Image 1: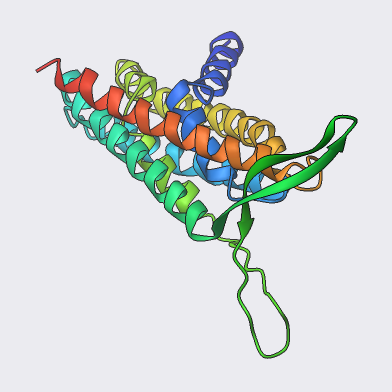
Image 2: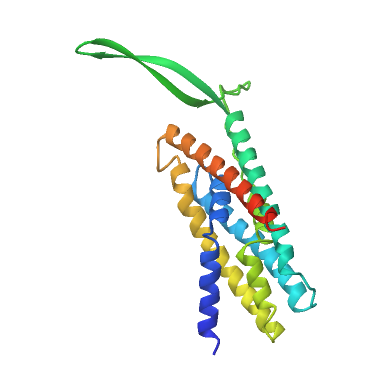
Length: 237
């Protein structure tokens, strides 16, 4: 009897993962990864964090009748904007901390003679140990993705979903719909993280300059969008 509404709820959760602020956040997170599978796991943990917040607040509103005004979610939205700015700054600092800027000239011989061209690129900094010239460290933690998801669950259309579900007469049915929505959201973010990780996968794309440009571009966009979110929500007061 509830098949059609449940399918709509799954679809709403799936598409919710592809909102602009979510995609900007996940692109900054997966840009740290060299492998798609690690990025996909980031997407799963992002979805789990997002779902944890939605289900928690939903339970408070549906089962315990805790009142949260729609106006209050504007503060939550501004918090998400602040988080996007912090995430972008963190990603840029981490990127430049592990890279050094190389500026040099290359000579090219043409029919008219030799010409020199300026080349600008980034190279990883080398760290030396007693047994090897340089070492690589890999971050296998997904705490950042989960934490970003937790904050994201406070705002946006996810908050509106909580308010809508709280209007359902049957508390059990409301919780079921929240869980289904969250499952769709996890699935959507899994797909989004996998897709956005492709340009950063060294196994698929051997273009360090392009990868560096993408990291900087996505971080700057995340920074600007975070500022826009804060401005838009504070202008409402």
